[in-house]
Image (cartoon, rainbow, N blue to C red; front, side, top):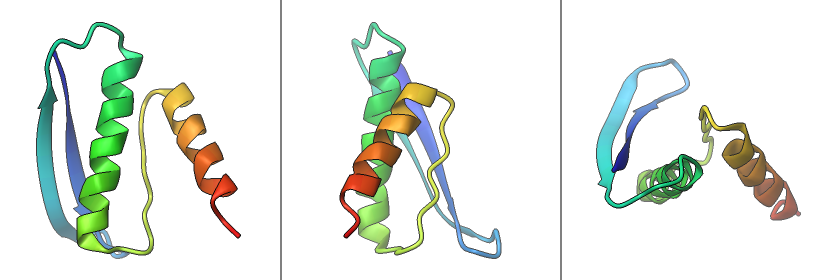
Length: 74
């Protein structure tokens, strides 16, 4: 079992929103981190915030997201 917690703050550091999500039957540490990043992205879409800063503690997941994001910038 894995999970994630999300806290959204504005540019002044003020609280905007929060969310908690659990993932069941996850065996690899990388998979829950990836699922957490996806959950955060979906949550951010609902907020429609153009400026998003994602922080994570699994370098492989963060690097993959950064690579994908830079490939989508025109």
